[in-house]
Image 1 (cartoon, rainbow, N blue to C red):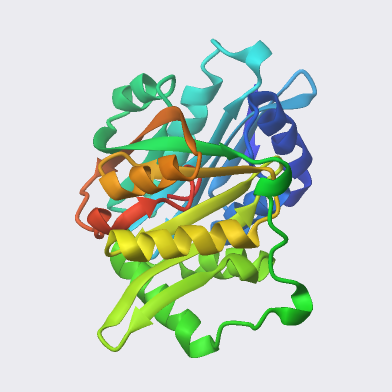
Image 2 (cartoon, rainbow, N blue to C red):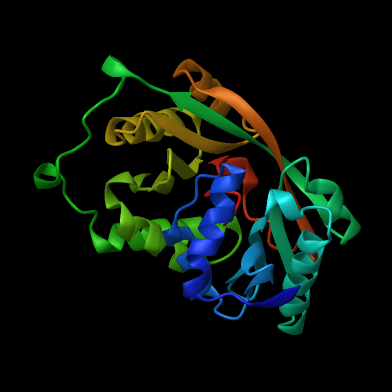
Amino acid sequence: MEMRTMTKADIPGGMRLKELAGWNQTSADWTRFLEGDAEGSFVVELDGAIRGTAATILYGGRFAWVGMVLVDPKYRGRGIGTRLLERCIGHLDSLRVPCIKLDATPLGKPVYEKLGFATEYELERWTLKRVGSDLRGGTKAEDWEAMPVPLFEFILKADGEAFGADRSGVLRSVNAEEPRFTDGIWNAGGMEGYAFGRHGSFADHLGPWIAKDEGTGERLLDRFLEQTVRGTIVTDCSAANAFAKKLLRARGFEFARPLTRMFRGRNEHAGRPELVCSILGPEFG
């Protein structure tokens, strides 16, 4: 078993594991990790192929994220996932990162608990399936107007407050890939809410979706649904946000599976979880 730092040449191997797991991530998501922390992503090679991956990304000096923890199903039970997680933790501890966060599946939660992670709050994956007349055309490229730079920077600042740390590098990349999904609502008093979205391998992903109240959340959700032309939409909702789940149900979304946000270390920058309708995604927070 060989463990080493992941490079861009390893992305196809990571994508193979992602496909085996049925996840929605794309090669662009792997690139975001490698560009965000070039030394913080790892692979395990065994029998001539990549059998496991784990990736980290730094969010300023406040905390780091661990994601893309994948193990080839045929090689589970050999400690590959645990060794990869320990390598990620060792890397982040060497950088003196005060807090490490991740979003755990029910299968992974006991493993993370043994490594010192505690529960912060619960999340839920919700999925929408659309066909025929439910699909809308989205804004045509020639009719779409880019968001003015000062307003986009305003959104990034607001996200730092809601999320608890600066993740503008990741959000700039998400916006560059599909700027028509980026939306914001503000007034003279400040930011009321905002949303981003990504194209996944089988579904479009809404998140982060942040709103101060139900009316703002509803407008952002409906505007996102007008822009996406995919038949499947996914979003990872805060379990404590009653109006977000209410809005999702009303538009045909269905509960898919639970997730748990966990942390290790000093969770001194929790952000404002009361504003979170949906997160960016389990891989990024």
